[in-house]
Image (cartoon, rainbow, N blue to C red):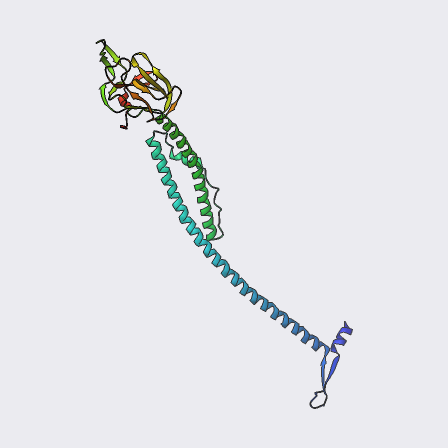
Length: 307
């Protein structure tokens, strides 16, 4: 330690000889002074470097904050636009539900309890207790709304498929239910107890007679399958069609049959021509409708006058 102090107290002589004058000068200082000056210079250089780095860092942090602020502002605008779009989608969904309810009411389909819709979609996970920023809050609310609409859409899709299936069954039933006039002409005799023109006795007349000229086209009044196409006693040339759902139609006294047994026909297809075959007093069509083998009034099944 003494040796170190002794060395620090030693002096250093430096001779400086300027080129202009050539006269030498002696500069003398202690080693301890040189060490102190060097240490001070090192501290000053270090402080300068530190504060310079801090200044540059603060400038960089400020630029980064400005960039993040701009990004957050842009994202906020996008989420706000998304929120408006989700509101529009929600309104369209509500409109779709209203139409579904109207369709169910129109076709006598069972309605869905509004509570069932809510139970059917479940619910989102609980919101976090704290959200870091406004943009996080917007993102969370948008996520919740998207999740809600997705669940509602899946539920409504299932219910709409049920409606479509039910309507398909109803359409099939309607397609196979007699509903149009079988031919042109006027009603010459209706259903019920009528006097037989040949015997004079009162008998039950199971259909309606529509009179017109021989050769007037006769059409199927619903989709079905031809189960009979030929002569049948007093009915003369007759066609019978099985439509399903318990319905059968018969067409008698034809002059010509244009279909064969087993053929599939659609409502409106021409199946024969009016005539006066069998027990008949003149050209007309005897038209019958039965449901589950019970005679129906054919006039109640003519809901569209297609001629």
